[in-house]
Length: 158
Image 1 (tube, rainbow, N blue to C red):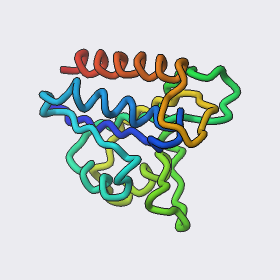
Image 2 (cartoon, rainbow, N blue to C red):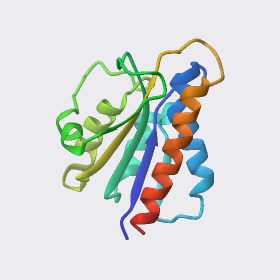
Image 3 (spheres, rainbow, N blue to C red):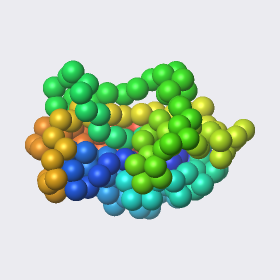
């Protein structure tokens, strides 16, 4: 059975930046009965979570992206080839502000030969990062679409 880790990034107090956490909280409820899926909120315990990725053969990442040049709420699926070339080792990374590319860089160091080849990154275009606890409607709709996309993907690979 393929073990899948789903990681969501974001700050729940920064409006649309919380979209990764919004998706993760919904997936934690929807996938609670799936022993083959681990769902991690990277916005609250980023570095510690990386050690829990051991034994997973697939990683799915969810985050917001600002300044994409696309309309707010646009959904991007980043190809695995681009993800493999993206990880950057940044010695100045702050453990409470780790981003997905940095997380992958550290995961690769931690997991070494067990680092999975199957990595998918979903990004949602955002522009509102004000100190606010609500998602804008276009970003919430994109988050809902992504939740269904991930659930359907997991059902196809059961």
